[in-house]
Length: 111
Image 1 (cartoon, rainbow, N blue to C red):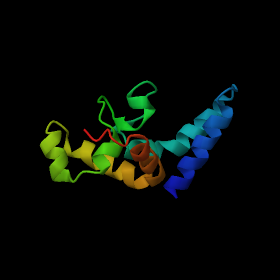
Image 2 (cartoon, helix red, strand yellow):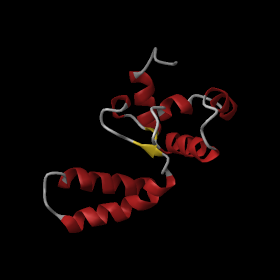
Image 3 (cartoon, rainbow, N blue to C red):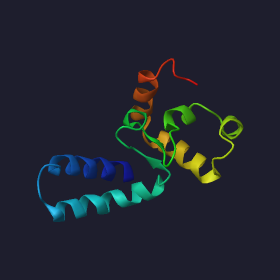
């Protein structure tokens, strides 16, 4: 259900991107709020890591973390909090198509 609401809200925001419709933006934000709160440690920023999902405030792509176990993440990225690790794995699970695309586009960049 949340995934579907998220898709609807994103589609609505994309449709309205070039229009001035504050009420529609408020509706889209309200629909996205539960999803955004669930993945609060994940962000998309144009110009940062080609705009792929990263842990907020870092340049660590979620696709890279999605391929590692929790113990591997703790070994390589010892400074991440448990919540960041959980958010990254939940985001990856909720967005399998995006993760598959990001992994494919970044083949050879496993560092």
